[in-house]
Image (cartoon, rainbow, N blue to C red):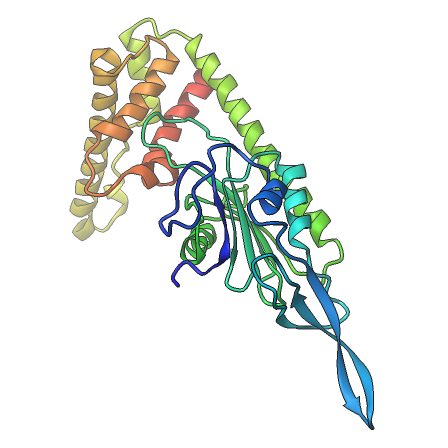
Length: 340
């Protein structure tokens, strides 16, 4: 099956999943409550000594089998792999408890994959409303493997995980968009770390706490912008030119054979900057949606221009959050911050 959900151990909040396993919950739930109420308590992971028959005697080798014990879904035990005494497997219940204690948010989705050796919990990250409209929702995700291969990973992604394919998409997005500041891959650990559960909790609290602080800072910044008026067109144009200035030609530093092409590139850049300034000003001067005559109105004009006015051949949501459009919006944000 493409979804690779173990039995029916899948949970989602409000939004259904493509595979249709279980109806979404209409009430928010903590991870441990999901384990008990939706997954009938889940299962435990045990280490069983490996025994060899030697000279007619059963002799323990010092290694262990990683065993998924029985659950309400399966009366058979399953071996996930083999390990040494250095391996300290996490328990699904402990992962849920640590999630609840440190994230302090309801689970968005939660599932066990394959035979149960792979588990994930996602939650909705706080949203920074830098732009209105085309927003990309960010999810925090903890993924735990109960064998010796996968380990435990904490990452953020724009993909909402609901199956084996989407958790892989989410993790691949994280790898490609890691910035070292809490976006993308955040932390990973193996079960040979005796403090794995403790460290996982610390990192989950850290990621969620930083996201909440950023939202609070952004909110305070927006309130400051709303209190700073733009009293005339001179100030409006000064802000626009500071955020999107024309560039000087540097063709004199190029060989004469290349100078013409360099001038053409400079002219194109300046025309683009001019189009941006004119487009934002037109929105600010009356064509925009509910624009106020202050720094907040200038920011809203900027976001409306890059979200809904500037032409694009491709969907713009990703660019608004993480690409060129986001960079251009942040140029205005930085300009307003410097002048407010």
